[in-house]
Image (cartoon, rainbow, N blue to C red; front, side, top):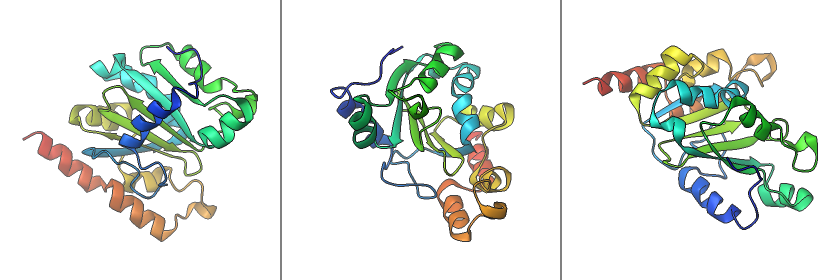
Length: 211
C-alpha cells in the first residue's frame, strides 16, 4: 500500500493510465469510458465507494490481489489540491488491504479534513493494474459506473452483491435522487440508457455469454 499521496512527479504517469481508460472531460450521462468494456453496471455512488474492496474479495478472482489507482479528478488535482496543499489526491494501493486501511485513505486529509476523498470529491476513478475493469464515480449524480468484460463477475455483482444494475433500473432505483421530486430530466434519462444499456441489453449479453 502506498502510505502517501501521489507526488507531482508520479502524477503524469498516473494520469496517462486514467486517460487510457476514461474520457476525463466528459460527465454522465455521456459515455465516460474510452476503453471499450463489454459490460457497464451502475450503483449508488456512496454504496459503490464503500464496497469496492468487499466486491473484489467476494469475486474470488485474481482481481483481489491487484494494485489499484484511486484518483480524484474533480476538484482538479493540480489547480485545486496541489495549488492549496502541495498534495495530489490520488493513491496506489493493494486490493487486499484491510477495510480500515482503505477508509484511512478515503478519510486522509491533504491539509484540510474537509478536503479528504470522503468529503470533497465529485469525480473519482478506480483502475486496477490489469485495467480489466474500472469505476467512474460522480457524487453529484449519485452514480458510479463500472466497466468490465468478465460475465461471471457481472453475474455476481447483479445477483449476489445486489448493488449493481443496468442503467434503466438504476434510474428507477437511485439515480433520480439528486433531482427535485426525483424526476430525472428526459434528455439525461435517454442518454444514460443509450450509453449504458437497458435491463434487456444486460440480460441479452449475459445470455450470449453462456453459449
